[in-house]
Length: 236
Ligand SMILES: NC(=O)C1=CN([C@@H]2O[C@H](COP(=O)(O)OP(=O)(O)OC[C@H]3O[C@@H](n4cnc5c(N)ncnc54)[C@H](OP(=O)(O)O)[C@@H]3O)[C@@H](O)[C@H]2O)C=CC1
Ligand SMILES: Nc1nc2c(c(=O)[nH]1)N=C([C@H](O)[C@@H](O)CO)CN2
Image (cartoon, rainbow, N blue to C red; front, side, top):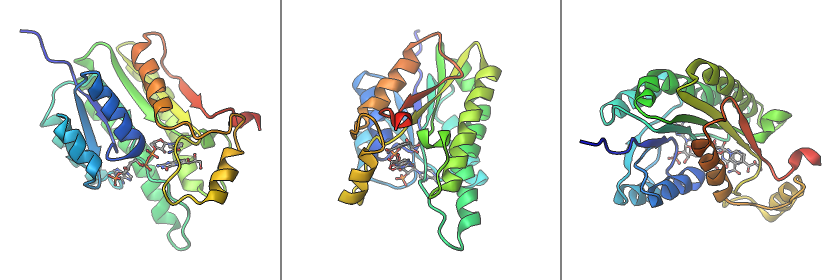
């Protein structure tokens, strides 16, 4: 009896980019598992479309390990893992150490532990992929989000190490976007200033991330690479 298609896990898919990519994968008949931290309309929509939604908070080791255990209770194989979950924290006065710990946990410890504990599930699928969602800002640093940026730079390094460790069966790549989509509370001044930072000057929307994800999933000869999707921000 043929095995049903192995699911793709997208973390942090209750809204925005993760939700968009989960919906596109479902459109293609791809089974999807998501993690979410907050019960949002997007989670309900994905469940209605047949996705498995597992609640998880990656801000500490216990939450990450609890998610891994829950995931293994639902599947023994994975086509891919997309590490999308992220918190975009600034250094709030007096909260610096907490911010650093949370950024490290969500952007580095969670991908690290999930990759190590789920390697066997990925080896049940061929092809098999890991994709880390990073940030173009890791290229130059960020005075306003020091811990966020450092943790994304560390994530880029995890891409290199896991690509070497898991080859040839599992490909490991990253996507480093600059502005993809604004947040609802971004004011006109911020939007104008941000759009001016790239050569192309647009807010492209989440479809550009899905195009990058599709490329990485479909291409058998790419590993240890981080795709830059930044509108030419490095040219300004
Ligand atoms: N949007 C953009 O323009 C850009 C995005 N990126 C990167 O792309 C990815 C997607 O971006 P975007 O869609 O804007 O991301 P969001 O800011 O919408 O975050 C995605 C999800 O991460 C989840 N999350 C946050 N903290 C935790 C935690 N401690 N444990 C578990 N889940 C958590 C949230 O879950 P919940 O809502 O359920 O609480 C949220 O829905 C991110 O990695 C981001 O850094 C990079 C550059 C630009
Ligand atoms: N987790 C998140 N990371 C990032 C976000 C976001 O909304 N959530 N947004 C950005 C910005 O778009 C930035 O690239 C331009 O202002 C970066 N990371």
